[in-house]
Structures are given as structure tokens and as C-alpha cells.
Length: 116
Length: 113
Image 1 (cartoon, chains in turn blue, green):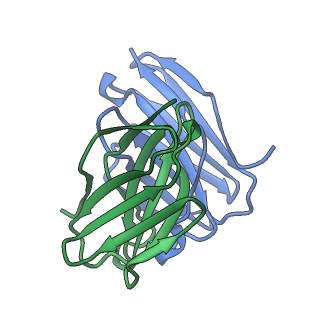
Image 2 (tube, chains in turn cyan, orange):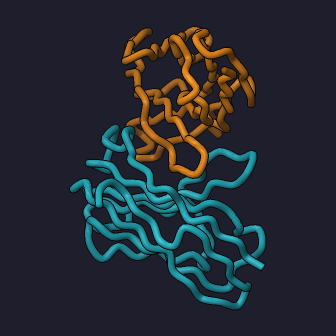
Image 3 (cartoon, chains in turn blue, cyan):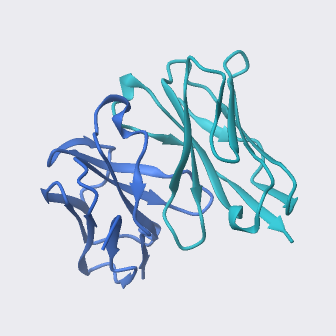
């Protein structure tokens, strides 16, 4: 499989559930990202990992917890979410995550999350 | 804060016509401006970028123009095809923001046969 893959593609969860989103990139990149895409709003950067180290947390609530065990895998652990967290969650990767190296990012298809 | 924004949320063109998608930005310190395309059910896809010290860059059927005087960016698509139907986002990145891409809201391009 090539590119950036995300699982699951769709997820419905209650506010008391715990679930995880998975992202895998097969491009040999060193940086990985989580974005939130809501209707009528620009993509919102959530987290950045560069060589497995978290380099950015864009004031994301603690109910979202990222994990990057290696440069190819990225997880987003979810717990006690709110209905307003319903959105498309996109994972991306780039060759480098510093300076301008992150301008060409490769995105996965996203996970459509619905919180009930 | 800094922002990038698009002038029109939707644009409809006839197949074969040229399309122009516009974007305004506010960050004078941007190093690169980038265009992404997002087709239905897919993640955004990199199209082309332009360094801030340039005013024009051409790719395959696409041209990006940068006017730093008025802080305006445009994407021109020549001979628009049905496969070009998608949401187009402009984005900017600056050295001071590290790897943070700041995206605009997107323009939905619809190509009519």
C-alpha cells in the first residue's frame, strides 16, 4: 500500500467512549501531522511530530491525545469527546517538519468522526 | 492573527474554459504560498507552490501569480476539465511558524460539461 492511510474511515462514538484513530505513511517521511477539518472552517492544525518528537500542540484539549511510536505511524486517542468535536480528522506527512520543509504535505483520506 | 482567505466560496466554469481562483493573505513574513486541491472523499493534495520572492510560477496547466503589493495570490487553471472539480485551498508557511501551514477556507470549483 502506498501514500498515507487512515483507519477507520468512519467512526461514531458516544461522549463516554474511548477510541483511537490510526495513520500510517509509506513515503519514508519524517514528519507527521493531525488536522481537524470542520464544515465552513479552514483546516486546523492539531499536532506535529518531527522524527517522532512532538514539536507542536496547537492548544488542543486534553481529550485528544496523540502518539507517535515511530516515523511511520501516528495515533490520535480520543476520550470523553463533545458533539462539537465531530469533524473530519486528517493525517498528513512531509519529508521534513522544520522550516519550509512542511509545505508539501501528503494527506490521508481522513476519518469522519461523529460524536453522539 | 495571520490569515489567508479566499474571495469566493464557489466558482462554476464551463469545461475547456480557464479558471481563476483568488486568495488574499495578511502575513507579510510568509516564505511560501501553496495551493492544495481536495476532491470529494479525499484528503487535500499539493498542487503547486511559489516562493515569496517570485511573482509567477507555472506548472502543468496551472499558473500561480503572487502580488505582494496587494497581498493577493491566484491560481489559474487552463482548459479546465471535469476532473478539476474540487475544493481549492491556498495556504502559507513562514520560517517563523516552523512547519505550520495556515490554510484558507477553500473555493469549491465546479466544472460544467
